[in-house]
Image (cartoon, rainbow, N blue to C red):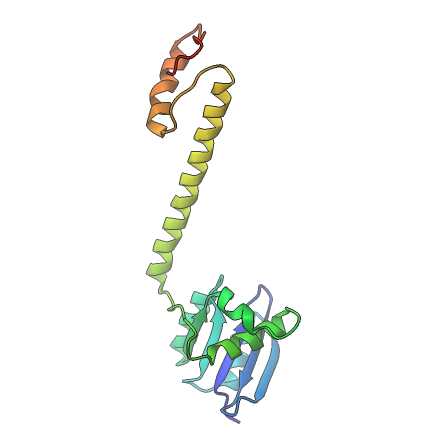
Length: 180
């Protein structure tokens, strides 16, 4: 009973696996604890087996680990797996859906990222979030000072130029209709 393909549903503490043989018969259905799932999986499957996972938190780490043990790892975007869930959504059915989705010839896969690629992606995500927070804070300040009749055009550079002027002006008595 050689396992041809395994779908893995990653979670925080429990990982579900669903494996099929070359006749597409389910021969591996296990609920495994996170601490020992890799050891158990490697005991059940042979190198060269296709392992599929949703491209989610931890998937690239586990993908690199499985590839180091000779497995063929295929990551898929979660929205491409969703149509293959047959009944109620739960971890066991998700693992089966992942296994099914892997078999489709038109399925699009995500390459497993190496550590450097993940580091760069993390830096970009943090920067994007910081820029979003900065924009929100600028808009908040513009809204608050508008309550005092102090108005500036949208761009950040305009606010940066206007703030010192507003703070230096002790009177801050705006004239109606004047845009700073």
